[in-house]
Image 1 (cartoon, rainbow, N blue to C red):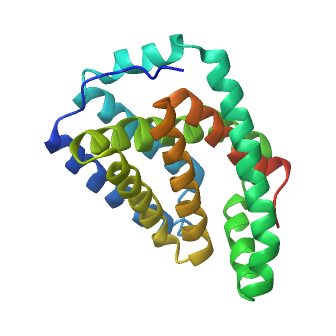
Image 2: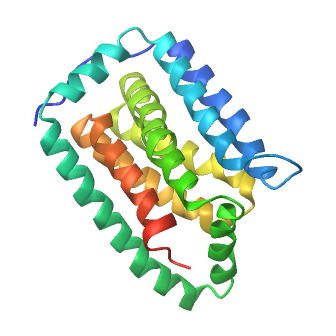
Length: 219
Protein backbone atom coordinates (compact mmCIF):
# COMPACT_ATOMS: atom_id res chain seq x y z
CA UNK A 1 0.00 0.00 0.00
CA UNK A 2 1.67 3.21 -1.20
CA UNK A 3 0.93 6.14 1.13
CA UNK A 4 -0.31 9.37 -0.44
CA UNK A 5 2.15 12.26 -0.47
CA UNK A 6 1.68 15.93 0.32
CA UNK A 7 3.73 18.98 1.21
CA UNK A 8 4.24 19.45 4.95
CA UNK A 9 2.62 22.41 6.73
CA UNK A 10 4.68 25.45 7.69
CA UNK A 11 7.09 25.23 10.63
CA UNK A 12 5.35 28.12 12.40
CA UNK A 13 1.97 26.46 12.40
CA UNK A 14 3.43 23.09 13.38
CA UNK A 15 4.62 24.73 16.61
CA UNK A 16 1.67 26.99 17.38
CA UNK A 17 -1.12 24.44 16.95
CA UNK A 18 0.32 21.82 19.34
CA UNK A 19 0.81 24.53 21.97
CA UNK A 20 -2.80 25.55 21.46
CA UNK A 21 -3.90 21.91 21.75
CA UNK A 22 -2.05 21.57 25.05
CA UNK A 23 -3.57 24.84 26.27
CA UNK A 24 -7.06 23.55 25.51
CA UNK A 25 -6.86 19.90 26.52
CA UNK A 26 -4.93 20.15 29.79
CA UNK A 27 -7.50 22.48 31.47
CA UNK A 28 -10.31 20.38 30.00
CA UNK A 29 -8.97 17.31 31.79
CA UNK A 30 -8.22 19.29 34.94
CA UNK A 31 -11.71 20.78 35.26
CA UNK A 32 -13.68 17.95 33.66
CA UNK A 33 -16.05 17.64 36.63
CA UNK A 34 -16.26 21.30 37.55
CA UNK A 35 -19.63 23.02 37.58
CA UNK A 36 -21.74 22.63 34.44
CA UNK A 37 -18.82 21.56 32.19
CA UNK A 38 -19.90 18.86 29.74
CA UNK A 39 -16.64 16.97 29.24
CA UNK A 40 -17.60 14.93 26.17
CA UNK A 41 -19.24 17.82 24.33
CA UNK A 42 -16.29 20.09 25.19
CA UNK A 43 -13.83 17.42 24.05
CA UNK A 44 -15.69 17.03 20.76
CA UNK A 45 -15.86 20.78 20.13
CA UNK A 46 -12.17 21.17 20.95
CA UNK A 47 -11.03 18.48 18.54
CA UNK A 48 -13.33 19.78 15.78
CA UNK A 49 -11.89 23.27 16.33
CA UNK A 50 -8.30 21.98 16.11
CA UNK A 51 -9.06 19.94 12.99
CA UNK A 52 -10.59 23.03 11.39
CA UNK A 53 -7.46 25.05 12.16
CA UNK A 54 -5.21 22.31 10.80
CA UNK A 55 -7.16 22.25 7.54
CA UNK A 56 -7.14 26.05 7.35
CA UNK A 57 -3.39 26.55 7.88
CA UNK A 58 -2.29 23.67 5.67
CA UNK A 59 -3.68 23.96 2.12
CA UNK A 60 -2.15 20.61 1.19
CA UNK A 61 -4.03 18.72 3.88
CA UNK A 62 -7.43 18.49 2.15
CA UNK A 63 -6.00 16.89 -1.01
CA UNK A 64 -3.93 14.59 1.20
CA UNK A 65 -7.06 13.41 3.03
CA UNK A 66 -8.99 12.99 -0.23
CA UNK A 67 -6.14 10.94 -1.67
CA UNK A 68 -6.04 8.80 1.45
CA UNK A 69 -9.78 8.08 1.20
CA UNK A 70 -9.45 7.10 -2.46
CA UNK A 71 -6.37 4.89 -2.16
CA UNK A 72 -7.38 1.32 -1.22
CA UNK A 73 -9.89 2.36 1.46
CA UNK A 74 -11.15 -1.19 2.01
CA UNK A 75 -7.69 -2.44 2.95
CA UNK A 76 -7.11 0.51 5.27
CA UNK A 77 -10.44 -0.02 7.02
CA UNK A 78 -9.67 -3.74 7.45
CA UNK A 79 -6.24 -2.96 8.87
CA UNK A 80 -7.78 -0.35 11.13
CA UNK A 81 -10.27 -2.86 12.51
CA UNK A 82 -7.60 -5.54 13.03
CA UNK A 83 -5.26 -3.07 14.73
CA UNK A 84 -8.03 -1.90 17.09
CA UNK A 85 -8.75 -5.49 18.15
CA UNK A 86 -5.04 -6.11 18.68
CA UNK A 87 -4.66 -2.97 20.80
CA UNK A 88 -7.70 -3.88 22.88
CA UNK A 89 -6.16 -7.33 23.48
CA UNK A 90 -2.94 -5.67 24.66
CA UNK A 91 -4.91 -3.51 27.08
CA UNK A 92 -6.95 -6.48 28.30
CA UNK A 93 -3.80 -8.41 29.21
CA UNK A 94 -2.08 -5.27 30.49
CA UNK A 95 -5.05 -4.48 32.74
CA UNK A 96 -4.70 -7.84 34.48
CA UNK A 97 -0.96 -7.45 34.94
CA UNK A 98 -1.13 -3.82 36.02
CA UNK A 99 -3.63 -4.56 38.78
CA UNK A 100 -1.26 -7.18 40.17
CA UNK A 101 1.93 -5.11 40.19
CA UNK A 102 0.41 -1.68 40.89
CA UNK A 103 -2.23 -1.87 43.66
CA UNK A 104 -3.55 1.65 43.08
CA UNK A 105 -4.12 0.98 39.37
CA UNK A 106 -7.61 -0.45 39.95
CA UNK A 107 -9.09 2.73 41.44
CA UNK A 108 -7.34 4.83 38.80
CA UNK A 109 -8.79 2.71 36.01
CA UNK A 110 -12.20 3.03 37.64
CA UNK A 111 -11.69 6.80 37.73
CA UNK A 112 -11.17 6.85 33.97
CA UNK A 113 -14.51 5.12 33.50
CA UNK A 114 -15.98 7.74 35.81
CA UNK A 115 -15.66 10.13 32.86
CA UNK A 116 -18.78 8.43 31.47
CA UNK A 117 -20.88 9.38 34.49
CA UNK A 118 -24.06 11.19 33.50
CA UNK A 119 -23.61 10.51 29.78
CA UNK A 120 -25.94 8.16 27.93
CA UNK A 121 -24.40 5.29 25.98
CA UNK A 122 -26.02 6.49 22.75
CA UNK A 123 -24.56 9.98 23.16
CA UNK A 124 -21.12 8.64 24.04
CA UNK A 125 -21.06 6.33 21.03
CA UNK A 126 -22.19 9.13 18.71
CA UNK A 127 -19.56 11.58 19.94
CA UNK A 128 -16.77 9.01 19.83
CA UNK A 129 -17.69 7.68 16.40
CA UNK A 130 -18.41 10.98 14.68
CA UNK A 131 -16.00 13.43 16.30
CA UNK A 132 -13.54 12.18 18.90
CA UNK A 133 -11.99 9.08 17.31
CA UNK A 134 -11.68 10.38 13.74
CA UNK A 135 -10.93 13.95 14.86
CA UNK A 136 -8.06 13.02 17.16
CA UNK A 137 -6.34 11.13 14.36
CA UNK A 138 -6.95 13.89 11.82
CA UNK A 139 -5.22 16.32 14.19
CA UNK A 140 -2.61 14.34 16.13
CA UNK A 141 -1.33 11.95 13.51
CA UNK A 142 -2.58 13.27 10.17
CA UNK A 143 -1.63 16.88 10.86
CA UNK A 144 0.89 17.06 13.70
CA UNK A 145 2.89 13.86 13.27
CA UNK A 146 3.02 14.40 9.53
CA UNK A 147 4.33 17.94 10.11
CA UNK A 148 6.91 16.91 12.68
CA UNK A 149 8.09 13.94 10.63
CA UNK A 150 8.77 16.38 7.79
CA UNK A 151 10.45 18.92 10.06
CA UNK A 152 12.60 16.55 12.13
CA UNK A 153 12.59 12.90 11.04
CA UNK A 154 10.07 10.09 10.87
CA UNK A 155 11.24 8.62 14.18
CA UNK A 156 11.46 11.97 15.98
CA UNK A 157 8.06 13.11 14.67
CA UNK A 158 6.48 9.86 15.82
CA UNK A 159 8.00 10.00 19.33
CA UNK A 160 7.44 13.73 19.86
CA UNK A 161 3.78 13.48 18.86
CA UNK A 162 3.25 10.48 21.13
CA UNK A 163 4.92 12.34 24.01
CA UNK A 164 2.72 15.41 23.60
CA UNK A 165 -0.38 13.27 23.18
CA UNK A 166 0.38 11.59 26.52
CA UNK A 167 1.32 14.88 28.20
CA UNK A 168 -2.00 16.61 27.51
CA UNK A 169 -3.71 13.84 29.49
CA UNK A 170 -1.65 14.76 32.56
CA UNK A 171 -4.25 17.36 33.44
CA UNK A 172 -6.44 14.46 34.59
CA UNK A 173 -4.03 13.77 37.46
CA UNK A 174 -4.39 10.07 36.63
CA UNK A 175 -1.09 8.24 35.94
CA UNK A 176 -2.88 5.23 34.45
CA UNK A 177 -4.66 7.43 31.92
CA UNK A 178 -1.36 9.10 30.98
CA UNK A 179 0.26 5.67 30.58
CA UNK A 180 -2.64 4.48 28.42
CA UNK A 181 -2.37 7.61 26.27
CA UNK A 182 1.37 7.03 25.86
CA UNK A 183 0.81 3.45 24.72
CA UNK A 184 -1.95 4.49 22.32
CA UNK A 185 0.06 7.42 21.00
CA UNK A 186 3.05 5.20 20.26
CA UNK A 187 0.83 2.53 18.69
CA UNK A 188 -1.23 4.76 16.42
CA UNK A 189 1.84 6.85 15.67
CA UNK A 190 3.68 3.74 14.51
CA UNK A 191 0.75 2.80 12.29
CA UNK A 192 0.73 6.29 10.84
CA UNK A 193 4.49 6.25 10.30
CA UNK A 194 4.12 2.95 8.48
CA UNK A 195 1.08 3.71 6.33
CA UNK A 196 0.64 7.52 6.31
CA UNK A 197 -3.12 6.98 6.47
CA UNK A 198 -5.43 9.06 8.68
CA UNK A 199 -8.25 6.74 7.55
CA UNK A 200 -6.51 3.64 8.90
CA UNK A 201 -5.59 5.16 12.27
CA UNK A 202 -8.95 6.91 12.49
CA UNK A 203 -10.79 3.60 12.16
CA UNK A 204 -8.41 2.00 14.66
CA UNK A 205 -8.83 4.79 17.22
CA UNK A 206 -12.61 4.98 16.88
CA UNK A 207 -13.17 1.24 17.17
CA UNK A 208 -10.77 0.96 20.12
CA UNK A 209 -12.59 3.77 21.92
CA UNK A 210 -15.90 1.98 21.44
CA UNK A 211 -14.49 -1.37 22.54
CA UNK A 212 -12.75 -0.13 25.68
CA UNK A 213 -15.33 2.44 26.80
CA UNK A 214 -18.63 0.93 25.70
CA UNK A 215 -18.66 -2.63 24.42
CA UNK A 216 -16.12 -4.39 26.67
CA UNK A 217 -14.93 -2.02 29.41
CA UNK A 218 -11.99 -3.12 31.52
CA UNK A 219 -13.52 -2.04 34.79
